[in-house]
Image (cartoon, rainbow, N blue to C red; front, side, top):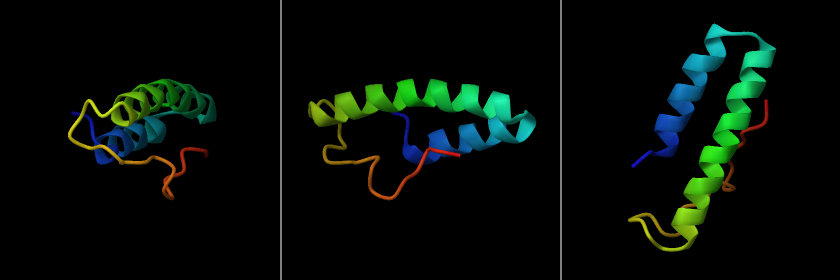
Length: 61
């Protein structure tokens, strides 16, 4: 399963490579991934119930 660290590492690699526009595109795609992860975590289908993306993790540039 994708972890927050995996997502952050991938986002950092992609963001480093490109322009501000690329970062915005990457953020948009991660927003979809995060929404799907949150939905699956909240429904209790994973081994990480109660994991919250809102606990101090900011995805805005």
